[in-house]
Image 1 (cartoon, rainbow over the protein chains, first blue to last red):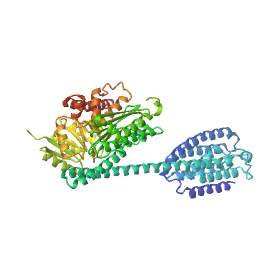
Image 2: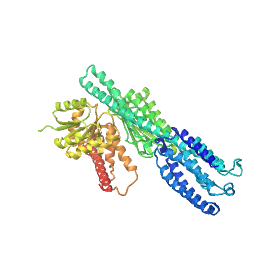
Image 3: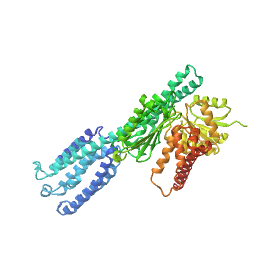
Length: 413
Length: 215
């Protein structure tokens, strides 16, 4: 019957070699390292079980001394395999193949140390539990198919050694257990490898995106330098180049806003409090209004507030700015200032235009200007905030809008 | 009178030369140029310029690092940041590191000359954008967790806040003086104080960090 054992050995052996393939190369096996280490702990625990089994059974063996030699070999192999398999080396696949051979050989040795009464009714010498190690190794190395193949091979070896050709799966769960361990651990190993690969791909993509962004910033910076230079020199030279200077200036402002938005660290970097759901940074919404005649000043850190409130504040600022454009007079500049007071924000929109003379209020109203003012007041009031309008004739108009960041304080007027 | 000495730190030759030309034409002595942090540090130590014009993006570091390095090498120099791209955190960092002014690169030659002269005279050169950043920084510090070990938390007085807000709203020092019925000089002093306190707090912070780390 030892021939049957040999057959099983070669089967296990060839299976291991042919199925190894590219499944587990050393690079991606980092993903399965925890599995390998856990498997070696299991191996040593099963050795303790196997030795205890030997102590309990040795009195029934026909050749106790030889059985102790076999158990000693088993212990030595357990140690060698545990050390070898916990290291990520190219030798791992050969150790796994050897694992199959050693397990089957030790199983076969049961026939040398006991009589038929014993071996047909008891576990093999290395015990089923210890034999599982070979299945586990194969499954982690080669995935579910190799795991199942190893489980099947060890089961067949066990059945042959014990002379149980008419295997009764209902009385002896060895085969189902070994095969399902091989399947389950193989699937686990493949899942670990897949998620590891995904993680690596994500990390690579992030790194590539960061490199691209850095490169983009450098290119943008160069373009910005040229635009700023054209604007500056063009203005100095004057005449027809003034138009070029103006165009360059507009693009310069737009590009500067774009770059500084990119430079803002992402919330995920942990430097700033995370955006909670539905919160947005008000700054970019206001900075979108920046131009050669509109300055936008804001804190260096995000000003987070409820999305729809932020949008409404930005809309009010837009209204105020279009009012400046229409009524402040040619060449007037506008200054938007955003301040974060913690619970609320203050947004000021000031222009350095003509303002309006007190006597011109009625006229202004007739022009529709007061209508715009009323619209701003109404919208801010809807947000539960306050808006004030200050007018200094000759020095322009200033709106100051105070709004809570969250809707919770809606009752407050 | 000796001409005012200036060093230009910028990695774009076009800018370096253009700015140097404008400054020379206005009667300043451009005693050195540098294209990076390392060059800026060694040259500042050698020539001790009165004013350093500092770009924010350098090949071997940012403007804040360069500002700190230059001021360590030449403590009597003043730094004016001249940036094309960012009116944001990095500018704030440069200010904390000791820069006393900030100008966008598209400012006209006349504005630049005025700013260099003001910086040399010890005045702070503010844009509305910078005032908004500084204001935001004080508010951020005030709203942060109170730290018992930090007695030096910088705070603005009411008057300083008022002045800074008006700067951020685009008013000139003269307009602010008129509006608050203060002297022009007092307005300048308030603006300078807002920067000085921030820089002092930054130094205290760095020292404490160094002591904690046993450096």
